[in-house]
Length: 414
Picture 1 (cartoon, helix red, strand yellow):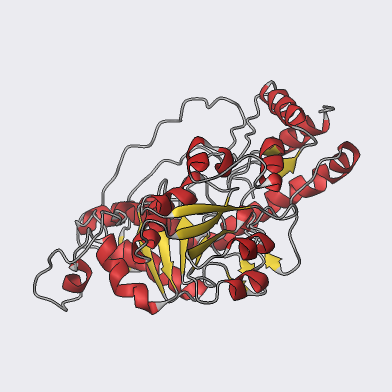
Picture 2 (picture 1 turned 30 degrees about the horizontal axis):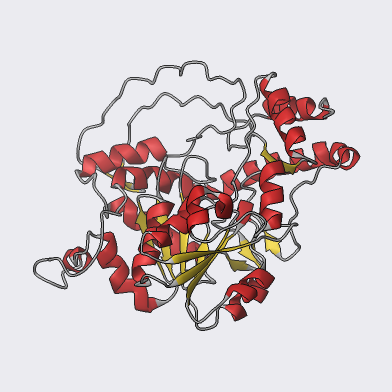
């Protein structure tokens, strides 16, 4: 199934109060969206794709008169995530970054506390805990999956370790059989930005740790433009999480009728997603199986089309262990050298195809050096960061465009 990357014309007709129930307000007709300006490069790295009932649900949310957070669609999304994953409680947030910041607040971190994170990750995986005064302790990754190395975690645990953070890179699960026992007595947090609905030995990612975070950024499988979620698997964090998310107030209890007014009760910030964004997200979540099928097709087309070329040119393709059910979040190549990686990026760009590298070694960054990071500390991370390239990958990637990408890569002899 191929989808046009252009947004469709939108007609708000037959709007529903909830799926199946008509609203009393009159039907609204909005003018059709104009065809977007041509996007350069011709095949971008990412392009948001809305093809379900997202626009219809935005209209419904507006007619309900509640555009701020914790409205009808927020509740729909949270219940769907809880039921589909088995997590004990899901709370939508404004971003995965903010969900991670909530984790730092929930753990009541103090100066001197240590948090173990992979060096190969986005900066907010570390920054969320550094904001609370914690010392970031960098762990290296496994060379096959690019996930945090359990052996490194074991060597880094000290009496000051207050949390272990794992990242399921590319939606492929970390070695949870080895990691969960290491975290006995230490809160385990899953940065699951890439892995919603992925599984490890049949169990949903985001349900192994006391806390987990999700991303709904436009580059993710399911997107509302910008958004996230906090998954809570340890109920002792429930009430505190609601307070932190609602600017440090007990507003959630007020909305449930448990108190007659709400007030400031602790630390917090404005982490609640708008219900308009939740309406978009609900349309995406409803279409999760169709989206998963499209991404699976794209991933396997790359895998099959590039396997021979990769063997001939010393290029590594993604590795998915048999115990992992991945989310097909991305497709990457690990080139033989930095020079080869940069040459392939230039080769593709000359053909109007945008490819990108990914995470840089956090322990070698200016901020990472301030936390005691040093070159050579995480050799696998440093090696992979210089050689990894991500190919165009998005829900609406047409088969013809993907064929162009594959053909361009096959023509490269770096």
